[in-house]
Image 1 (cartoon, rainbow, N blue to C red):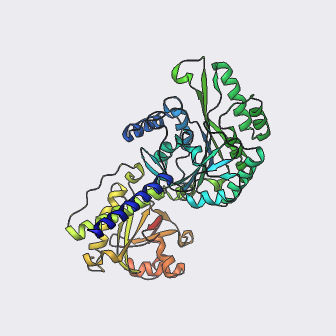
Image 2: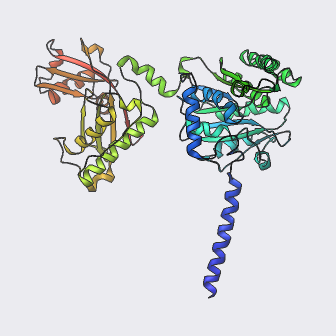
Length: 501
């Protein structure tokens, strides 16, 4: 009897300790069901509606700073949607949320160090490495749990982030009433921790003037927006000190402006301004809201996926983002597994408009570094996702150079996908760029061959070797056929990505 009792005691203490740790590290919501719906389905539907009503297209620049409101969604959600929708083309890994303390007065800046924030749409993890690196920069940067206990201003931004981005972590920061020097120190520390990363977004949570008559509120808010647009940090700070400008989050805004100046960001766009009267109709006591983005206008400061898009658009192919690449690789993997194990073609449903485009694609299979199959369609004959599915089966079972992939091999293969632009005819081999262009050579109806762009990179061939091998190996023509004016040569580009990346 003693052993079971002792075992139960051990379990009890382990369970009690896990509850204590979980309670400390996991921040539960303060205003769920008040500022926004507590039901995940209702919350998701509401934010989708805000996005659909926001008359703005996502910007083609990498945005470093986003300023958005934090009132109840019924009042400020429509304005906030403009900001989140504007930055939605970016793929951020770390999102630093700067908010103001409304309930607990203190002089410093509090940073939540680890764990996660539990929301109706799921738990968002804290980037503990980033948070701790930031906190170590200054002894005025602290972690005080009670600062977060009742605060809404930071929390209400998280559902919008969850509906806009995937696979990100947050760094929750709440400002008390620190002096300007501490705010400046914070902006410097933030800049140092971000360093040269291009996947960090700073979200500043703030409303504008509070409880003035509509006309006066708009005048005060215009002064605030003018100071921000002019990058006049001094005028903004002094205006807030004497109440000529009013923002509950003016300290986080000041920190963000100083941070943006250090990064050399030269563009500030006010995307949307409104106040509560625009929703309620009551103009006697209103609260102002705005969505603002800060970024660099430099060409190399656009979202990473859009930099690829800009390069590839000349070749007639619109780039895939990371999420879309992962989806196609998942379709290829699941298709091969299903077909080899069960002999059935996987039924796939897809709604992403990019994956519904009609484009050619190749699926290549490697086994421990060696080619195990490669088949594709140069010209798209249906939605891209279906082409990838069908070419995955063909590559695994129909490549005449290899026997079909067997079930015992599935764990040892890796998949590579090449999404192709539409081929264009070239007049001479001088137009071919090795490593960038795939090449099609054809003569008459029966003789044709193709090499994907990566063949040149993988083999190290010169252009002459590349073309000679293409003529001889693939097209069944003389090695120097590429010099023959009667031979048709076409080039295409490819986005190549694999499970190994």
